[in-house]
Every structure is written in C-alpha cells, then in structure tokens.
Image (cartoon, rainbow, N blue to C red; front, side):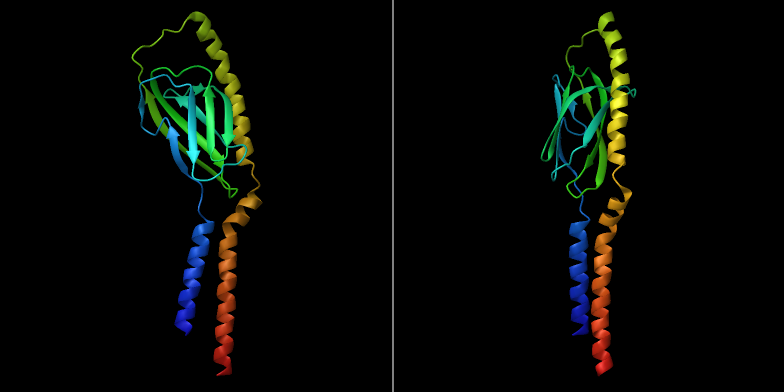
Length: 186
C-alpha cells in the first residue's frame, strides 16, 4: 500500500511539474532556419507553439552585425509578422527573437538564413545616406523593446518557476504525514 502511494505521488508530481514547466518554442518560420532564399523577402513570419504576449519581438542583423530595420510588427495569437521597409539583399542574416509566452516566461532564441537573389542592385548615394540614419533609430527601438521584456518582474518569474516544486513538496509532506500517522497508530 505504501509503495503504491509513493509511486502515485511520484507520477502525479512528475506529470504536474512537467506540464507546468513547459515553455513556448518556435514552431516554424518564414524564412526557415538555414534556408537559402532565392526571391525577395518583404516580411518575416514566426509561428510559436502557443500564444505570445505583447512586447514579444524579433530583430534581424546582417552577418557584419548591422541591424536591419523592421517596419510594422504584428502579433496575432501565436504569430509575429515583421514587415521589412525594403527587400533584403544578398547575404547572411541572423534573426533573434525574444517573446513572452502564454505562461509569462520570457523566452528567446535565434536562427540564421541567407538571401541569394539572381540579381543585386548597387546602392545609390542617396540610398546609402538614408541607410546610415535608420540603424541608429532602430537600435534605440531595439533597446527599448529588449528592456521591456527583460523588466518582467523577477518576483513573477521566481513564483512561476518555484510554484510546482512548492506544491509538490507540500503533497509529499501531506502524504508523509499521513503514512507516519498510520504507522504510529499500529
């Protein structure tokens, strides 16, 4: 009887904590991780396993570290769509995403892809001047959004992480006390 009770407690605790500690992950993306894109990209779409909360976002960097400006970023349930101000040029890109999952936990990840168009336009002097100003503005915006995600109260993070262990510990104490009382009466 006691062994069955311990096995039941262990299984219950394991099932409870594993479902509680599950986090949202990236389900799919367009472009995908490692993809070599052969046509112009006007938008980037990230789809996650569950709903993502406000302040979730992503940034896009060229291989040399330059930040690519993302126009409007739309959140719709489990999807983030970022509209690019201009199509991406040939080269390697790194996308870094930071989200707040439905469970309130901040989660981040990254992946890379390449663009290999058959043609490439040479930038004009006017375009290169405009491009110099844009990354400065987007870096400020990037810092603001990153600060918002990182400023999720640490107390809330701690409670969400420790709650399953506290409940599991209480269950073990209650069952242990019950077993101790039964043995004491005998």
